[in-house]
Image 1 (cartoon, rainbow, N blue to C red):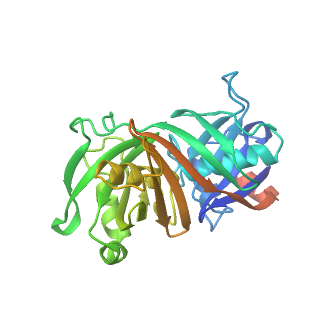
Image 2: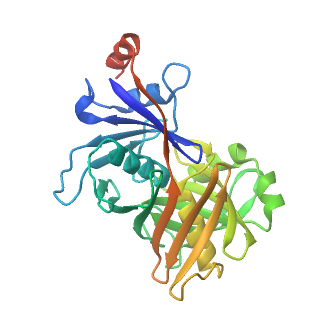
Length: 291
């Protein structure tokens, strides 16, 4: 079984092609592959297959380390996009791929960088069914902490929380406070969580707690959710009259998120391969036995 490991700002995924797999990629097998003690390890598995939609070049399936399936991942999508180009699935600079969240449309900018049209963000969704039209709410987490948040649906659900400054942001213990928010009753499908603070006009720092993963060095959809929340709160770089450009600083590097007046989101960043490998016979046997 051939696979590649890729990373984007420290967010690492294993990439497999469905037609090369000797078995179905189940939740149990995804958990084993992502476990660094018994498998190659990663923040998730990206499974690529021939397109079901003739207008797309591939279908992308995203599995988290806990075996759950994600609708979309901004970093994972960029890794899959750059993989498709390098492996010769297309020679075009603009194309589309299909995810559970729908179609996304990348533009290749260099050998390592692309801009991804993530579609229009939504403030009302089934992921926050009790939420008002503006997607704003408050939530009580551990130790009596109470947070005001902005719900944003960018392919997957985001709970974005503004804090006063970088010092407060850096002091947060995400592994302690993240799980209670991810699994709060307000979010029946669980949620991704981002905390952010403004560094300068049009520049924010964000920390991410991903659904089914935990704290990560970066997240494309998390950065997008934080940028949308920031713009809705009146922030932005204002590179164009109808568009706010937000640079999001994450532990793994920077992403640029462009947000239009109608909340259309473009995400720009890099993704690179780490290694190419073949699974050992022993790992294949263990994967075959997994439920």
